[in-house]
Amino acid sequence: MPQSGFASRRTPVEWGLRGALALFAAVVGYVSVSQTFGFALKANPQRAHALAPGDGRITARLAQKMLLSKQSARARAADLARLALRQDPTAVQAVATLGLDAQLRGHTAAARRLLVYGNALSRRDLQLRLWAIEDAVGRNDIPAALVNYDVALRTSRTAPELLFPVLAAATDDQAIRLALVKTLSGKPAWAESFIFHAAVNAPNPRAVASLYRDLRRAGVSVLDEASSVVINRLISGGFWEDAWSYYAAIHPGADRRTSRDPLFTSRSTTPSLFDWTPINDAGVTTSIQPGNQKGVFDFAASPSVGGTLLQQIQVLPAGDYRLVGRSAGIDQDEGARPYWILTCRRDGRELGRIVLPNSSRLNGLFSGQFSVPSGCPVQVLALVARPSNSASGMTGQIEQARLYPVR
Image 1 (cartoon, rainbow, N blue to C red):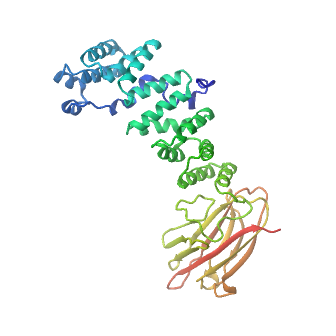
Image 2: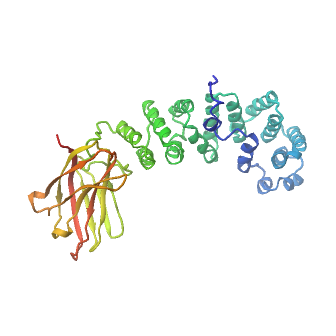
Image 3: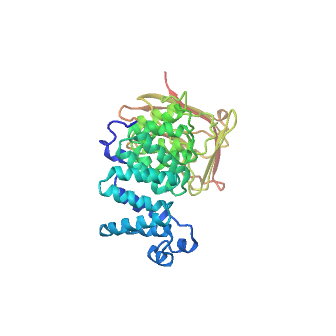
């Protein structure tokens, strides 16, 4: 059923497919012919046609190239397409050429009749599917357009390269997004690839986050990697609230007033910036080694090397907070021991630091306090190594780290 308002929202709705001529030109390189010599000469259909003037598929290809090359050749292209159909009534490219010519002439009814005929010949032809998408868009029919997207993506290996970008851009439109959820709920083979493509390439990460929420409600799984990409893009774009809202939606129990995963148990291989993120740099090696109930953050730094070892972005409301935890294996001079630091992400302002004692003291326990002022909505909690003069550099582990509000 046509959707109202489809045609008026031009940028996301037209999906980059409003120009039929440009649309067919974009994919003409993907079409092949079955004859060996025809395939070898597909870049030169004139020569192929000279070698096999009676082959309807080669004639159809020449007709298509002539139509796309210049407007003055349209009449000749249409004549060749009709000849191709006389030579081979199953020459789908000839049908597409005649349909495009009819569409360019404004003969919509004739173009649609040819589309019906082309569909009867083949549901797998990419050009016909693109033509069907264009026709559905022209009729403001989102479901029909998505049906043809689905068919094209199921049956053509080259379709994702062409169609994923425009479909990802279309997620900005709510009506399209909701219809897309229904399509992806059918779990087509291309669903997972598209979901990740949208995370990385869609122009509006907020729209992708909305799509992911709807997909989860519909029972469609979204890879952790894709979710992390979207969260990080939202954070990088300054959409802190959107980023946290989506993170909290996929991590039940997440509380913006506290840090996350205090015992390092997460097994995610693609953490978001709201998760613990180990930092590996020249001379610094770090890793999180998760366990079933308790994990550990392990780190090592070469002599005279310092820098950030571990970090996690926070969205703490203004107020006072305490950091508590436990270390193991840290044994350094006072000026070389690592420290925790909380900074304002917006301007890098330091909100406090806690130097870790050697792990032999107090059984490795550490604690300290930070104060978050107003006007600092996003913070970075980081563990930082200071250069050590020890011949073995610095090694150690963090077994627990939790930041929480002071009541």
